[in-house]
Image 1 (cartoon, rainbow, N blue to C red):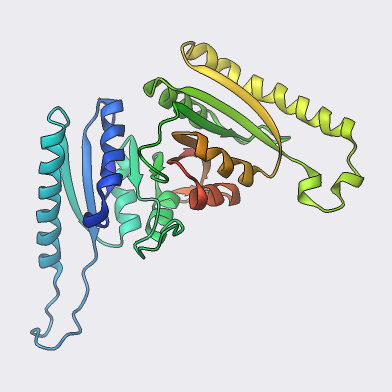
Image 2 (image 1 turned 90 degrees about the vertical axis):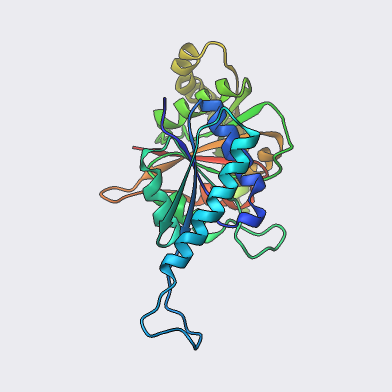
Length: 292
């Protein structure tokens, strides 16, 4: 059995969408589900508590109780799924990332706890992504949407940066979902980057750049298409702003897969500006896969 799927449950009252996504991922992988909650002890400031009192044990017991109730509900609805719970003490992001060291996937919520519609990705989820050693699935958009399409954003430019970890993850996820893989590379068109870009870049140069991109994309995909012959793949090269086009594509996908670089000499994953934009604005779940 592969490592468990770990889901970080922050707000039990509004966690149904998050837990449903984690259950689906665990069932797709045929592995266990761990429900995790991080609590943070603090010194009370309200009068009436004895000196030196901290609610650490109270918080732990309350977290364990709520996790037990949630796990029982999940188990009743999915009797074949093995469910475990973990209440961990400490700041949420590092605690969840540490707990997920043995996981095959870590699932976190796609918005903060402020309760505002359309809120950007919360600091806990973003912090967890940057600390995790395993792929992280950030839940975004509606779980009711089904397109049977997985989107893979590749960087195959002059210095190709998309590694085998991302490609393997994307092909495996597409196969698990019996979906169609749409793999694309976005060439940064100078006309979109600068108001004067079109003056110094001819149409012929534009076409040559796109054709080179197509060749590199096909080269990157070729060995994986051989390893996963049943996965339907549609490659495409677009011209424009990568972050903008990636975000726009998310309303036509069930999952978007992008990579993040492992920190050199440090724990966790470094995500770039494009990944940040997608995480904040995507209309479907986003998987960030560490590359080494």
